[in-house]
Structure formats: C-alpha cells, structure tokens
Length: 298
Image (cartoon, rainbow, N blue to C red; front, side):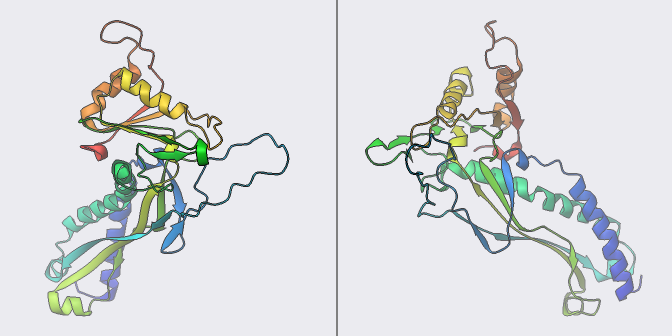
C-alpha cells in the first residue's frame, strides 16, 4: 500500500472503527458510585460541599449556610496512549494486528473513568475531602462550637477493604470529572519528521479527567471481616448521620462494594435466606453487591 495521505486517512478510519468497538465493549461500573461532572477548565472548585442540605422550620430570620472557606478542588490530569505503526508494515499491507490494538486502546479509554473512580475510593483512607479530613476518617467534625463532635466512617482491620455506600440520593459519594474524552488522532502526515526519522506512523489518544469525593457521610470503609456484625455497624453508622444541627440526614446505604476476597461473603450476606447456622438472615436484600477487581488489596 502506497504511503499517501489518502491511504493514511483510510487506514485511520479503520483504526477508529476498531477503537470505537473497543469502547462499546466495556460495561462500566463507575457510574454506580460517582456522578459525572463535565469540566470546562483545568480544575473545578466544589464550594457547595459542606453540610448536606436539610430543610428546617422557619422561625425568625433565615439561617444562612455559607460556602465553606476551605474550597475543595479537583485538578484534571492528562492521560495518553499511543500506537506506532511501522512504515514497512503499512506499505506491505501487514496491518491486521493493529485493528486489535486499536480495540484495546478503545477499551483503555472506556475504562479510564472506572480506573480513576475506584482508585479514588480505595485511596479514600489517605486522601482529603471537603472538610480537610481523609474521606474515610475517624475524626470528621460535625456541628459547631461546643456542640461539635468527631464522627468516624471507617472501621479498622487487617483484611481486604469493603465499602458500604449510599448511592440512592440525588448526589453520589464520588465524582468523575471529565475535561476531555479520549480519542484516536493521527499525528502529522505521511512525510512528517517521525516517519522520516523513525519509520513510524503515530496514532495517539489523549484524555483529561480527575476523580474525587462529595459527602463523606454517604460512605463507610472497613478492613474488618465482612460479617453480619460489622455490616450492621456500617449500616448503623450511615443511617445515624446528622447535619450540623443534629437533624437526621435520612441516609440509607444501598450498595456494598467488595473485591474478590470478599465476594463470597458478600453474596451470602445479601442473598442467602439463612445464615450458616440456619437462622434467618436479616440482611438479605438490604443492599446491592458490586464485586470488582479494582478494590483488590485495598
């Protein structure tokens, strides 16, 4: 095949077809725990994060809830992937394997939100959220002045992490911030410097995105054994959340996220009618199970 602009464009169309097929083959999980925010700049500021909204009886003047002084920001990172096609293979029409490679690129692009969101979930132990504490922490401040108390949304242990989340509200506990979707673009033309110097034609993908957190009150993380007692403690913790004035937030967890090591325990806990001892399983159907390799070892 002659190395002409038209042939390169036609080959690019073929690659993009495989690229899109790779994207379409991915069944994403991230939207179960995160909201999409379309970003328009290098970073986004979430000044509205503070106390979950809660109506109160109107007595006297309105009580203003001002934006917190400590603003929560997410900075978009750059991500790339690149295909190098040897000129000789192009001219000799040996291009079959590059379609498969382009499909893999598409899968990689489609999986980026999952990778970032679940990475953020696992790193919640060591990454700050809007209140200056780690998203999963033992000392989240609730209330003001003499009425302030420190609240935990984490349980210690030595096993693989599992997470109980409230995702059935208008806001999910995590954010996927997208500045630019991944694409597949050809660099230059058949006579560019890269072809001359390295005998290669280059196609590349570029995306810009970030992942972060909304309200810590909507999540609970544990490294303790996944059993009925610890699951109950996590449910009670979330359902007991109050706003800064002590009013219940009425949160009800509905999603249990586990890695492979806890999948069997999660299935038994949420699906079985009976416990191993033959007693009624009170927690059957109390949450959906999401088993993912992306929290392995967390």
